[in-house]
Length: 294
Image (cartoon, rainbow, N blue to C red; front, side):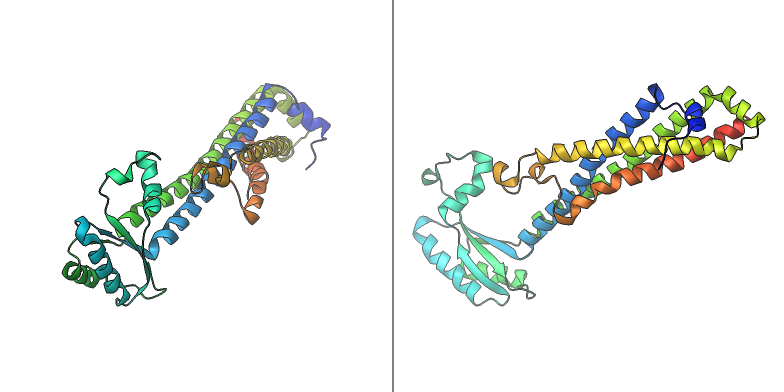
């Protein structure tokens, strides 16, 4: 994409406020687009992890007087052992329960002074879900203090929220593209209006509107491409300095912002897309402005 066009440079100055503003706008939009893509991909990964983590598991919460807790725990495990669709069941240790409660009550929760229910984790057999209603009825008969939680009420809202975050990322990238198109359109029309006298002279000497418009399209497309390239580089550099999940704690959404594997190729599409948006916006603006100057 060449910009060495002396006549085009006279029509569209290579320097100046409009030139700098076009490049800076493209860079800023590309920078935001990188984070929009990262947000969309991170939300998608989060939805998949939540779905996988909750899809094949369930929990039984057992509350009973201290003298009966061990007997009812054994009864629950026996019921689970004979329940079709249950691949495994285990009683969660106190340390595991402490870790589950830490986000809410802190690491110094005195479990010894609290009466906590006993938690039993259930793993479903692959492709063979258990009958939740039938299991609840059996538990009521064998261990009245047992309550089955199949995670359905937790799984659906979390996955819906993550899917909406993914949609928000896509919408953000689309709005960024529209914003770039609007900025380039305004810049092209302002430059055309400022060079109206030059355009009139060019027409008098036989220059066609197609040639004049091509000079604008070429110049503004190049500016948008270079600006977007700089913005993408800055965005990727910013993502690389974010803490990883090992540093900030696994499962933290903000630390998952970034790209993995072939996803790193996606930001490289932003400069060509920005150039394409600038090409279309400038072409439409140039021919419209040239018709008005007739």
